[in-house]
Amino acid sequence: MSKPRQDPDSVLGLADRLHSVAIRLLRRARREDAAMGLPPAQASVLSVLVFGGARTLSALADVEQVKAPTMTRIVDALERAGLAQRQPDADDRRKLSIAATTAGIRLMQQGRSRRVKALAHLLADLDRNERATLDSAIALLGRLQVRKSGQ
Image (cartoon, rainbow, N blue to C red; front, side):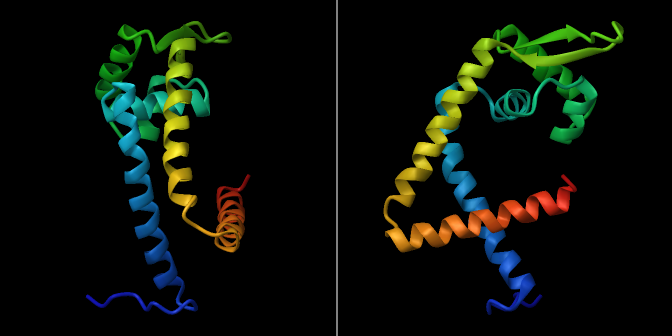
């Protein structure tokens, strides 16, 4: 299989390089998650709840790409830890939504802060012009994200 071209005009090559860099940066930032004391699946679900809002069990399962029984076990564990809670839906009492508790929000915000500090440590090695270039690239990526999601 041939490797995508590496010139800037190759959209496939650009996407390949962006993917590689994004994965490595995410892995580096995720090293900080161990300090939360949660297994990765629980940390991921709690992140969805804290930064995306309450969800039904099936919606969480869809986002996390797991089956409902797996999500039930994850949510049960988060509830036992006092990090999430099931709440009846205001409009349909048969429906339950899962929301982060105050302790869950605090834990996830602390985790995010550790990740951001780890990335900031890496960025500190860049000079002012490099940081400005990266800032412009982030703005471009943000525009793509909004354009593709239809928001």
